Every structure is written in C-alpha cells, then in structure tokens.
Image 1 (spheres, rainbow, N blue to C red):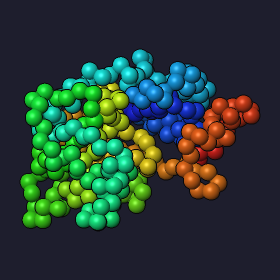
Image 2 (image 1 turned 180 degrees about the horizontal axis):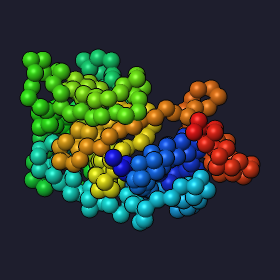
Image 3 (image 1 turned 180 degrees about the vertical axis):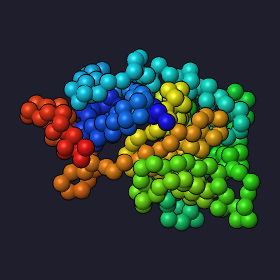
Image 4 (image 1 turned 45 degrees about the vertical axis):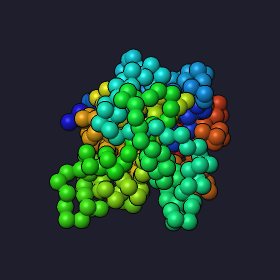
Length: 297
C-alpha cells in the first residue's frame, strides 16, 4: 500500500524540533511506500498568520531535505469547500448558532447544578447554553459561531444501538501509531466519549467562518490523505474528525499519532520555544542529520 501523508503547519511562528519530527516521520513513511508527501498551510487564522513565517516554513523544510507535491494547499483559499460542508451539516439539522463568550461558558459550566466542569480537546466542554435556543432560519446564518449538536450527531452517525446506549459505537478509526494511553489498532468512539469527552464543539467561528476541526477534516479528504501523521496531543481531537468524516460521507484515513518532543523539563515544545526553532539550530551550524538525531530518527 502506498501512503499519502501530509504536514500541515500554521504560519504563526517558527518551526521547532517537534514540527521537524512530525514532518520527517510523515515524509519517511511516504518515501518508504513510494507514496506522496504533501504540504498544507493552515492559515485560517488570518489575525496571526504572517507571510514571513510561511516563507520560513518552506525554507526550513527544504533545508531538512523534504520535497512535496505542488501546488501547496492553503486553507485561506478553501472557504467555498468549508461552506459546502457547513451547509450540509446545517441542512441535516446538526448545527446551531452560539453567542456565548469564553466567560459565559466558564460561568455556565461552573454553575452548581452542572457539577464539576469537564475538559475535552478544545478545553472546557460547552454546557449547551445556546442549544436550547430554537433556530428559525432555514438558511445557514453567516458571520456567527456555529456548534455541532453532539447528541443529534450521535443519532445520525451511530450504528445499530446496543443494550447500553452510552456504549453505542458511533464511529471508529485505526491507529497505527500509539495514543497517549498506549491505544493501538481499531479505536471505538462511543456516545459517552462524545457527550462527556467532547461536547458541542465549534465548526465555524465568527472571525474565521470555519474552524480547525472542520477545515482539517475537509482538506484531508480533498488531498487524498491516507495516513494522518501527527502528535499524540491531537489524539482526542481525532474523535471529532472521524465523526465529521462519517457525517459528511468522507473517506476514513489511517491515523498515526507519534510521541511528542519535549524540553528538558518534560514540557512539549511550542512556537514560543525559539531556542529549539529549526532556524536557531541552522544558525548555530547544525546539519539536517543533526536534527534527525535530536528527534530520534
């Protein structure tokens, strides 16, 4: 089987050793199978994306010895595809507008009757405040935040229900790497996982007209990605992406979540870690093989 993998950075800061590991691993997997390695620039956050960071991404990846198919997909040009996916979900009755601020969500989730607030892939799980409002518009509203009604989505996506509805398998994916708890092979996603571990997540933001979860799902399908190679920090988000694939009728890729590259204190690297930026190592005289050794390749 030939692999089509992708590396999908956001041009909001310098690439660091963690990015290098993910890109090199995906590239090596594609090369070993005589497949294709793709690059996608995830620049939907126009307020933080910068052209010079995008140029630095290309430069660093070329220096590492990576090549990719052209043209490079850029999410800032993909809004029509995201609109089509949102229209489909809206027509299925699975979306609703949300006007809650972060403070509103924190206060509602912390109310005594809600119990201890739960946390999911996007942080604090939304308590469903706006879900109780009835949407009267037949057409999908623009310029507003939209959330997926997770309970309705479960009813749409779930397979034949077992005796215990909470354990109903709504979707599944195949993990060829390793999840944070050693998860490997076929991973079942149950109704309980989605309701209590994810909640009504955002599919479109007022300031972006899409979201990371929606755009990455639509774009992986559009690029024909067969193996999604990324860090273990995104393992829980895979439940969202697989659910969206099922709802939108998109193909299911294999997932390969890899270990995270951490600093000396055990904290995973972030773009603010300039000391471990690829450009910094280059300036200090490191070679691409040095980078491979640093990340365990």
